[in-house]
Image 1 (spheres, rainbow, N blue to C red):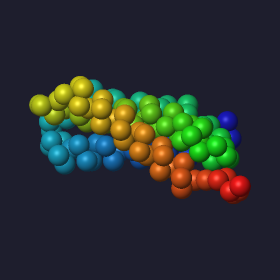
Image 2: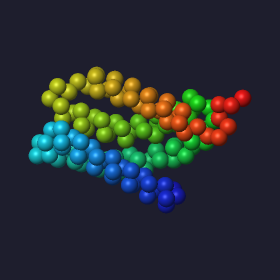
Image 3: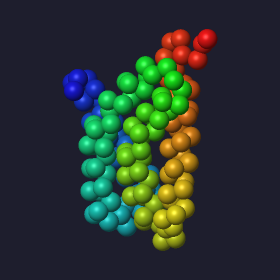
Image 4: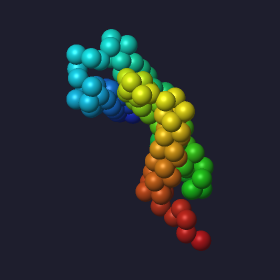
Length: 125
């Protein structure tokens, strides 16, 4: 893997994990966060490294739905760790509601990224 892409993936995973700790800590209190929550954030680092090759591939894919699918696959695992680790701390946690919200947001963000990150000449006939 390209060193720049690897470094970007590592930094992105660490930043997303740190932000999740800050946001969740502010919401529930840092003292209330269990050890497993902090350890789950470490999973974001490999979760960003493994699908990182999908983003450049998506950026050059001309077909909109394929591009959206690549973006969705790229964000699926990191966002799952981010979302479910924070949602599980809620005393009113509903796995079905959390999963439904996860699926909807991954689809929305994939469609938005696919529209914004369109390669030159895509969509023109």
